[in-house]
Image 1: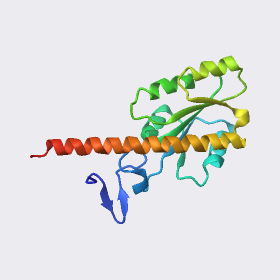
Image 2: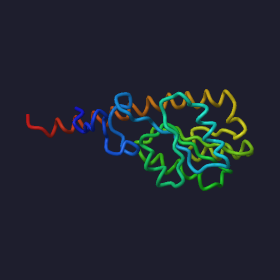
Image 3: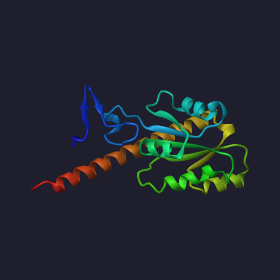
Image 4: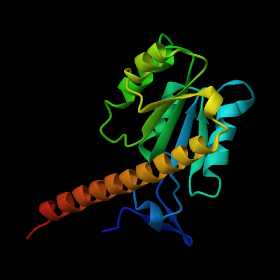
Length: 177
């Protein structure tokens, strides 16, 4: 059942734990990721996210390129994208990510001062929610982020279990009777 997990001293090793998704999260040293793509000045968004989830069992990773974002996507529970307006090239990222069936993350946008119509256009590009940069230090924002992380961690654990079950089923069907 867990033959794909190799013993490495007294720690479980899963190859590159930052990229590959194998093994139950609760049974390994793996922590899911919150990915912050790009960044604004002074890392304000990352700091606000960190303040929201401090003490939780997650890693926060800043990614500078789309390929780096993609390499962590299967172990992520939340993807945060700073968006200037609905014409920003970052708005094309959710549709690319949703083409991967292993993506279980919520994808959120943090926008500056944009009107309601612009927010609706940003939301229509595939984001789960759009927050104003003005609210990222509020208690309600922190609670919302915690709830999203909790919900998506459950989704990720379910996806991992489904992957392991598929591997086990394939191994059993290939073995002689």
